Length: 240
Image 1 (cartoon, rainbow, N blue to C red):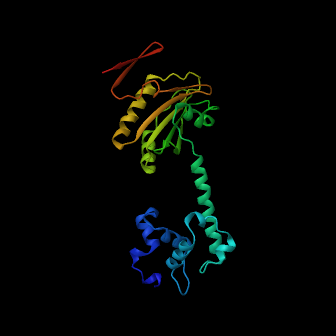
Image 2 (cartoon, rainbow, N blue to C red):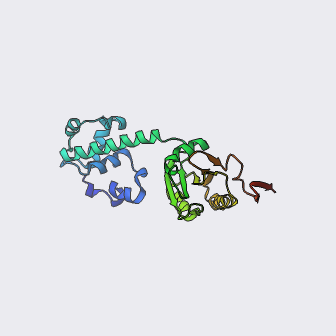
Image 3 (tube, one colour):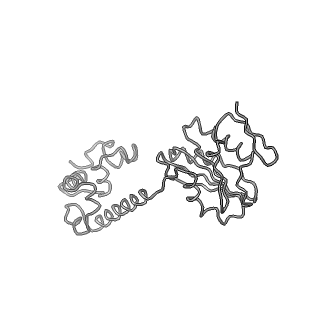
C-alpha cells in the first residue's frame, strides 16, 4: 500500500499535527523521521521492519554504517536519524540530572547564581513539575533597589502553558535584610489565591540575599485566611 492510499487522517504527519506526538505509535513516529519509503515498501513498512529488529533503546546505539544497511535508509537520512537519537540521549541525561527542589535550601542553592551580584531587586518564579523539578525559570527585574511587583499574569500564563504542578517565588533584598515585609506577604497571598482555582500550588516564597534567605513556607506565612500587622520591626500574625 502506498502512503497516498491511506486516508488523510491515518497518515502519520497529519496525525501528529492533529493529535500531537504522544498520540502516535512508535512506528508512526519513526516513519515521520524516515520521511519516505522505497518502491516496494511504504515508510510505515520500513519503520515497522526496523522496530521488529531493534528495540527503542537499541535504536539510539545504531551506528552510521548499521543504519545504511537498512533498506530505505540513505546517507542523508542516516545522518538525520543519528542526530535525532543523540539529541534524545542528551535530553535524557539532562533530565536525569535536573535537581528536585524539595527544601528551601535546595531552592536557594539553585538560584544563587542569579541573585548574588544583583544591586537591584529581582523576582524569580521557578515553575516545577510534580517531582519538584524546574520546568522553567522566569526573571523580572525592577528599576528600584527596594521595590518590585510580582508579575502574576506572566507567571500564571507560563504555568498553564507548561502544565506546572507548582511555583516557587524568590526575590532578593540587596540591603541584606531577608525579613519579609508586609507588602511581600500580601502580594504572595494574592498570587496564591489566584493559583488555587487553577490547581497550581504556590510552594514557597524566599526572600534572599547573597548570604542568607527567609522561607515564607517554613515560617507559616503561606496559609490563606491570616492577617498580618507590622508592629515596629516585628511581624504579628493573627489567625481567624
